[in-house]
Length: 352
Image 1 (tube, rainbow, N blue to C red):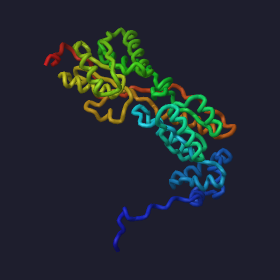
Image 2: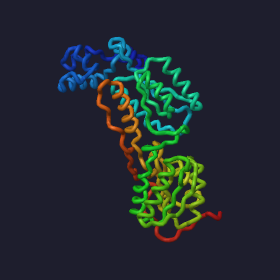
Image 3: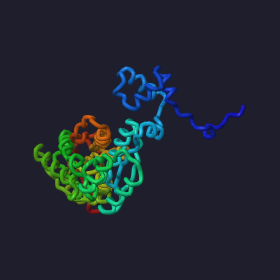
């Protein structure tokens, strides 16, 4: 008998509420009550339904659910249009929390100037039934209040009109861990490639670097200002390494660190044998560089999830408000680009 090619087979049929009920050993009405408000069921019953749903990969039909309950199960996520600085990992965390709560998340880009974004937001709210909105774009207070008269709206993160992170997302305290790590490896003279100082994150990382170097009794090898790019990091590292006594560079983001590593290679330095390099952000490619990059990882997914839970709580009358998000969790991820400080003098090819 001829076998049907896998790609030609029809997609597997989605599980039904009745199959979930049979596997859980409950009635289909109980499964419906679980989806409407699991808090009204006994914990043991909820656990059985939850396990059955997971095993069958059951996904509720949101359209049918909306018709049945007269509720809307669509949420809106507003993101900046064409911004290279938007932390998409925050959106990933928010989307996961929304889907876990049984909501569909529509992602819409708000482009243009402040007034243009405001007009776009009004058209979006006029055009579709959304239960609530999570905005990763700053919204003027007057526009926010008007939107909140229609649906709950939570602004995720703290950004200015140019999407420069402020508040928790600009916390620079992990610079202390970077300096402590390098000091523990024997480095005594460290330099910093700073990001553009109109960014709060860049200012905070620079300030904490200087404080940490001073507190540890180390030598500040200098600060080179830069933009958020690898090319800028390359230029900054070449300028800093005119001082051949520098044995470590802390770059304010991973792109700057990537440019610095290339500049060091061009100058004849080996990383980390001659100079250690540390970045910030832990972009996915950072683990696959040669050498792989020591960097600061920020748990942006958790920040996105916590702000989504704020929105979900606002959708439930009388629900207790979730706690305000605390400081963004950060940790130093140690990889190959940082190592023991070199001993002895080094030669460079700066004059070549």
